[in-house]
Length: 146
Image (cartoon, rainbow, N blue to C red; front, side, top):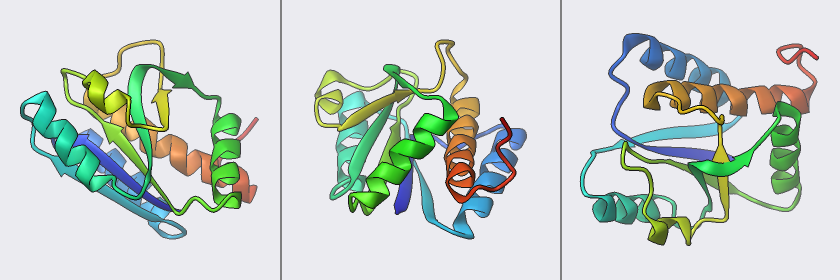
C-alpha cells in the first residue's frame, strides 16, 4: 500500500524533522511513503490543495474528534485495507485552524492520536511512528512489545 501524508507547514524543530526522517526512512524499506508539506493559508485553499493531492486515495483526516486506535487495532485496519485491495492511503494533517467541515465531509475516516492536544510537529512524528509500529506488528517484528 502506498502512503501519502499531507501536512500544513514543514517541521521547524530539529528533533521533529529528525524523528520524522528516521521513521520515514525505516518505512521506505518496505513501503512507499511520501510526506508532502504544503504552505499555510486560508482554510479553503488548504482544503482544495489537500483534495487535489489525495485524489484516487483512501482519505484519512487527523482530527481531535476522530477515532482513537490501539496500535494492534491500527495494524488490523491496515491489514484489512490491504486485503481488500486498497492501494493508496492519504492522511491529511491540517494547520492550526483545523479542517473545515466541507473537507471533513469528503473523507472516509477520521483519526485522533490522543485526547490531549498535541503540538503539530509532535503529532506528525507520532503518526508516522504508529504507522511504522503497525507494520511491525503485521510482520511480527520485535519492535512492538506487549
